[in-house]
Image (cartoon, rainbow over all chains, first blue to last red; front, side, top):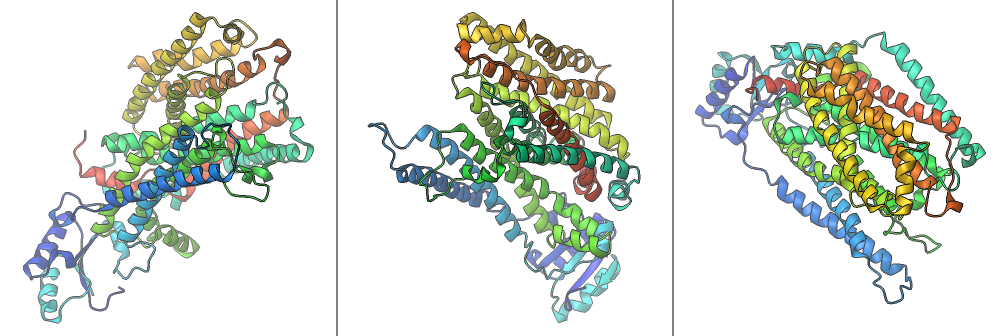
Length: 166
Length: 434
């Protein structure tokens, strides 16, 4: 275990997980402090309900940036060439639109992956506790830093639910 | 159907943790054939592009046929997977990763062909937009440059679409292996823990990617079709080409997916996961695409015949009654006549039936790409520009090697990561079947 002050319980099934979460809530801990780690998404349970993410809006911003980049790339390139067009327009908007479109989508795609990596706290050094038994189907519930006053109470409640990890 | 999460995990990790010894000779054989293809390419680079059969007036032969074909095959995966994810079809779960892998590998193989076709691939960077001392800028009016942007966007998007749902499975592998493999999977899992926040973000990112990748996939094959349609060559300069190419790409892509699934099912013993229902549903999709392909073919041919413009009708009859007639009718047989009964009759829409139809479709679609390219180029407007094309052993070897390369990459992939998404199947256990 990487956390010295945290207290966790390994639950053998998701229903016990719900009990563990409820125990922490009844001890007065806020939902935002409670960590539930599992090898599959547990969307059905109330504790898995999270606030809506702003990811789509950030992706839209990335798309706009990508599109602007695409348009600037094509237009500045064509103007930079100083080609004689005999009075015809230097910028060919129909064809520039294709490159602009592709770079708009690329901007959105790259923003999605960056936002995901940042908000899911991947790549960066992760200080969250972990137990390989999670991969065998167990669910880990607890808090990363338990207040000393509540520690014994939480441990007592966890004992009835599963294996304790401190 | 596997009943428990433990069973799913055990069955799907087995090919990675305990790979079959039978695979090694197959891998060695495929690697040798790929090496033969590379040798042929090296020979072409050393001797010059003249060793290929492409010469005036047919400058696009096997290489561009393969380029269009493989880009088409790449439509299987990401597009089908994205559509099934967005429609929340539960039967998608075992097949999405099989499909997404096809996209990435087919794109990599397809993108190699313009380089092979260049003859001097070390100058390929001239296609990239950057200022240079000669004052030359890439021509944004050229469809070939649109290809550069479209294919790269699609490749990056497809790679992300494949890798995102792989992260939790890599974390699973990390906890089940030791030594260098543990280090490898730790790196690939990016420090994944499996907190509810991480799951939530992953699903949101997958949802957004599924939405983004569909228009990108459509645009890629649209732009590949514009390589032809923007050119005043008989039977190319047509508005129908974009949707015709997209439909054809999805058609051949689904067929490739079914073939891959059949091999995976038997070689990795995934009978309980890649179940007959998956083949039945994909068979129905293939049937729809077969009908759509035939509709486009008929619409294209009828319009040309009715217009009766001399250069167009010359190519028209060249493919239907002339020297290309055998290929044309084999194409119609493979893409419509054979698959239609196999896929329309429920009793025949078995795993064997869909496999047979898919093999026919892949052959038929390769011929279709060839027939789009070669007859039109060999029979342009004026008789002095007419000519013939015969592929050489170099082109044939390289073409055969790419098919082996696809099989090799797929096989190697299935030995490194689970080819069926474990966490998605486990999540599916708790969800009512739709």
